[in-house]
Amino acid sequence: MTSLLKALCRLACTVTLTMASASQAQVTSVGMRQIQSGGMPITLVYPTAVPSQPLTQGPFTLQVASNAQPLPAATGKRSLIVLSHGTAGSAHSDHALAATLARAGFVVAQPEHRGDNWQELSKAGPESWKTRPQDVSETIDAVARDPALASLMDTRRVGVHGMSAGGVTGLVLAGAQWRMLNLIQHCAQNLDEDIGFCLNGMGQRPELQTQRRRQFEMARGAPEQYMPANLKVAHGGLSVEASDPRPDPRIAAVSLAVPVGVIFTPESLARIRIPVGLSTAGKDGVLLPRFHSQHVLKHCTSCTTLSDHPQAGHFDWLSPWPESIAQTVAATQTRGGMPNPAFTDEDRQKAFDQMALFFKQKL
Image 1 (cartoon, helix red, strand yellow):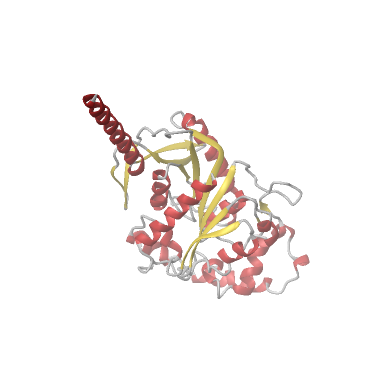
Image 2: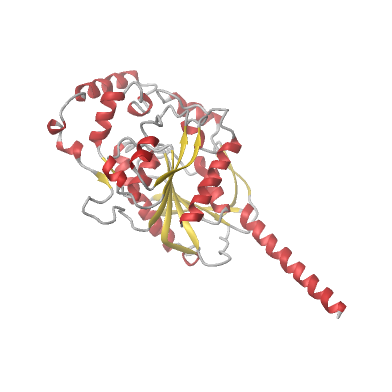
């Protein structure tokens, strides 16, 4: 009897160690590959049992298992989170967050937004804000058709994370609406204070800064009824008559980091019903928190603060963020842009872990 008990114990210990090893592989290994949808690149990041290796692409070095087989969930199916990058962004600069979410058990899809990405800026700004939500819906459809992932995924409840201009994507998909009139009125009154937003990307274009200032000055004090009709058009979420303002009902939770916020109408923010969590940065000179993040939190009753970081700047949410790219991007800004050493890698990772926990609770 004693020999039998010892044998059973050895068997139990072996099973336990095997399960622990599988769990550890799920936690530490991140797979990555790319698919396409209508010419739009989509980077997929997901849990895998294949060990990660350094992958260098340009100035970026990522720890991934390229084209590895995805790891099935222990029970049920995995949830999908779509990451919407900021202006001129890429999947690489958001990889640390994507990897954190993958290690937490999610499949992450990172579309390269059409007309506003690291290779092309022809639609950066309001034109891209109009099309970014459709890019996300198309991404969900593409992942749901993917032969390697379709059977492992549940795309009926999807999460979205958006940083900066990606915050516009997230808020629209939550049901909010924005207007060009809100942007113009805000910048006509607050240009010098919120210059990072109102003259975004014009750091090395003084002649363009002068032209834009004159345009905003002409709009200062102009009665809304005399403004062109196209500036009053509401873009984004569904109309007031809709019981559910989300343009895509699969979106079940949204996380935002330093989002563009002032362009959204207060009444549409108040109609949001799904959970929205914000990560804020006190040293953000590009999008002043009191005009953007605080505007969202003030009017959206289902929005909460996931974490607040008094020392963080706007681009501190990007990781990896090579020094050469940081300097190039900062030079285009009218205010702010360089990383703040007071916001450490540990601070950033804690914020990313909080985002992962948020999605675990809400999806």
